[in-house]
Image 1 (tube, rainbow over the protein chains, first blue to last red):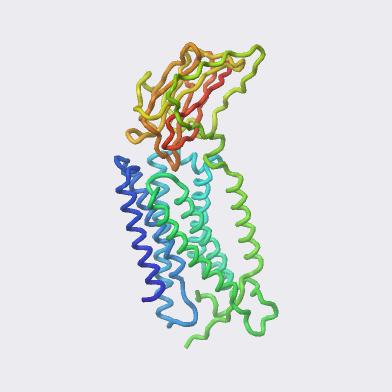
Image 2 (image 1 turned 90 degrees about the horizontal axis):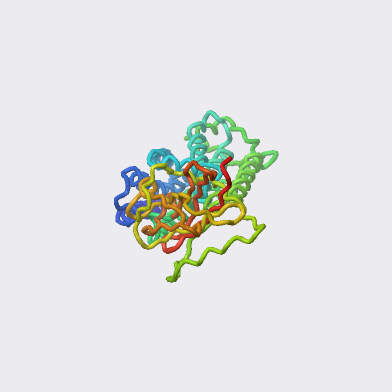
Length: 220
Length: 187
């Protein structure tokens, strides 16, 4: 079984445990439907974030059609994460606009500021994915920016879930830490690969000038 | 067979920008207050003895006026029922004074919080301060509302004293929350 499959299996198991813990715990007992929807969406988003960095293309060793399939899964999971986070935030806004807007304000608690920054960065990461070809950045530059911001999304988003009190207290905390650790390790591994890539043979300087060269545009 | 693209390093400007962004995020988190701007942890453990007598004001004393903190008005509603119990397990109490530290009797104080049985929008009551300026509300323990249990205390009725709204935090195990108010004249 490949490492990606193992990580995927852990993420699915983690998602199931988080959802069961949240729904079975006292915090959501008798809670409004929107709060339940928001919490379940957050649980699934955390699990998806854990596996997402591991779904990026693996260069060199795998055949082209395998790499393309992984990029496709990565894009789809990224879209799912974005939808889940939007659902999480909108449900909270509708359910309790006072507290939601306060949390998103500059006066909000640290945990809410973590979530706000993670959400904004998720938007940027998603936009970078959508605009990848239009930006015409070099693959290394694009991967570095996209991967760095995605790593921040994982750390801040899952960190927010860890420090917040509520439905995932108790056993939910170690599960969140495992999922967050998986996502963070995956993101860092990808970043290290990008940063350790050797310069092109014959290049005048190691960096690439940030612009894509002919033939680079469609490669991930 | 496609020719593999030459591998390169990210542009230094991109690396610098990301590092700057990380530093800015760290600073933003470092500067934030754990429970929100101006929110204090007012929780504690109730001691099973009579409430301490309010210390009379010393002539010339000055008590700093209480200022509405961010989030203090969250889920506020004006029509709180008068002097109803919100359960048992947590006592919310405090002394209402003027800026000369004199206790203010008969001043309405509204308390609202989320408990296991009621949301912050439903679980509320207004009580009047006693002759010693002290108010007291009994409630079920507070439960996390947006990530942390919190208690709202307000003087919200138009009258001789300016309104003030507070949002402070407690632990769910706390049995006592002490929130004193110092009011200033409304005109």
